[in-house]
Image 1 (tube, helix red, strand yellow):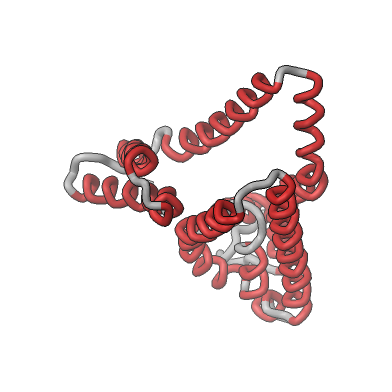
Image 2 (tube, rainbow, N blue to C red; image 1 turned 135 degrees about the vertical axis):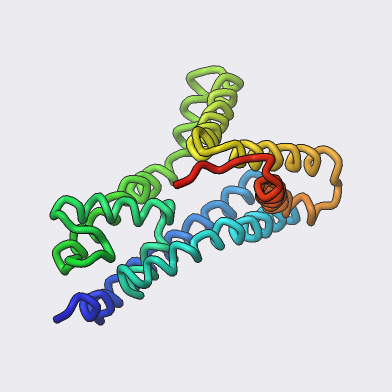
Length: 241
């Protein structure tokens, strides 16, 4: 059997479908758990609906970035693997890199001449193990986080715990920002600064609820448009690959 036939075989479609059903089940489970917790806390239903709607709309922008990876994946790994990997939990752009590292263990490069069933298998295992960590942690710890936070609040000053949690959020997104921009040209810093300014202005001065729900997506678009415009104007730069 040729590699293309293996990549699009019924077995892979079934395996990908099983994973997709598991992911869909996880989404439903956590959504229900979140809504139940919100009701227990007495949150206003209008705010809950607004939060869900805002989160749903905001995911559209980042999801569009997967389209570029989708085209590469279809050609290299076939339809079922593409369907599964780009709907899995993780960074879509990291999948090609991880698959290349895994296939490199047997001296192969995904999509290149000589890429065979062995290299394809190594690539699949590399991508699976790359995502296993956060899938496992999410499954085991998410439902317990409320109890963990309650225990910390009972043992320590709740204000300190709240500050630590906020600090963790700033640290996480600060790391993602620096990792995405550092050493990659002034266009990236410009996009980050423009997005931050747009988000501040939207949060500070815009009172319309629907626009507030779209603020993250709007800020992202503003950052991309400003950086792109300044790049073509020759004001900012992007290093050559």
